[in-house]
Length: 433
Image (cartoon, rainbow, N blue to C red; front, side, top):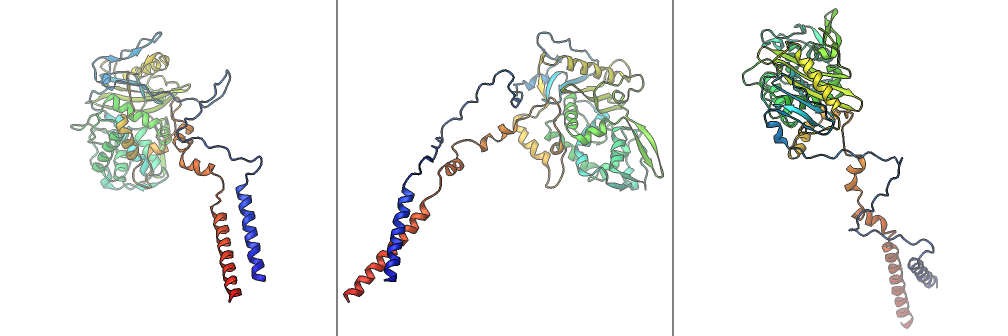
């Protein structure tokens, strides 16, 4: 009797569960799922004064071959100011945020870069060492410095912080500091190879590195275009920017130190060259073969510009600064009044490879990874980047909208009913016996 009662209760409970599961809950109907192929609903129109996330500037088509042409390349619109006429053999003025080249002349002409090549050296080597790291200089690290090189005064046996050595590179253009940092980063030839790889990852294809400090060497060349690429990458790195914008610093000499000044006159305002308003840096250079060269960047309002000037043919040794000043002034005045004639960004087919190279081996820092956005630059908003992960109608959405599953309760009910029927049949056989 006890077993029979239990079976009857199990059967009754199972039947009740089936009734509950099959009956809809009043007022709680499951909302219909959106069809997988249904397009997303358009956003409602925004009225005056509405606030929303700004749309990044569209990437405009640019004829890259235009920068290979002779003469000054510029596409003025109505009201555009007249483009300057520097005496430099080649020059570029570009928007550091968007990478758009606003105007240029002989942008891809291959010329010796002098110490402006130290921009590429910094982009390559800066990630390898922390600023606070200390290093004692060995004698062999100072061998092979070219005759007549600019020096900051690094001495064998002295211990320096890495930040001191970088001040020597950016402010005094010290080839001795470059030699030590290169020795700390795999050696002279290895550093040259690393720099070459870095240049290619940035889309700079005119540069051939022989001497990482920029000292004249057979076959060593760059271009105004490539130098502008390096300058743009540099000002997007806060550590690079901190060094290249420093006007004065103390350089250690054992138990005492001495002052050093940035040789970029647009930063210090020395030698009668006025300090440029909003100047960020970047790097100047000179050799008898290269003449005067300069990469400069400045910020005004919400825009950052970068210019490169190679080997002015008139005006003396300080003309490179005045020609860069004219190009910066023009670039800021021409905002919205010229169409781009080129781009500092690598072609689309190279961007994925470039970003992979920028990441480097696991655990290694890269300037691009640590870089900060330059004001005026455009990037895809987070909502756009996540669009593919949030599309309606995906498998994840379907499983979420399906509601609670009834498979488990039904299986339990079926098992209980089967057990009850089996027990009932067994009891009938016993009673007949």
